Length: 68
Image (cartoon, rainbow, N blue to C red):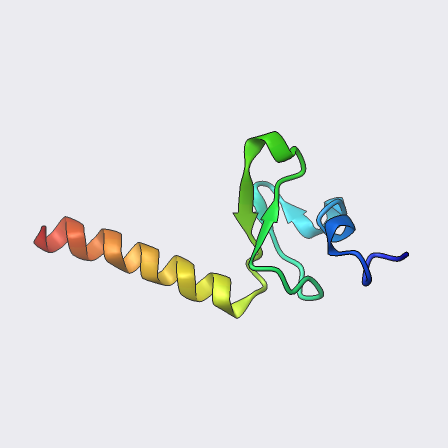
């Protein structure tokens, strides 16, 4: 079984990690576990849905700070 068939192996490639950030266009998951799973998960920044979710979260924080 190769990496394309098993997405759990995709996030173990250190070439796809840039510090705490994960970027892999071949991985369709929005959230992936960190290299050390006990530290939680992170967004796949190559996914347009992850970018949308992060934009909404950031916009909510900014709007709340300005008008809340």
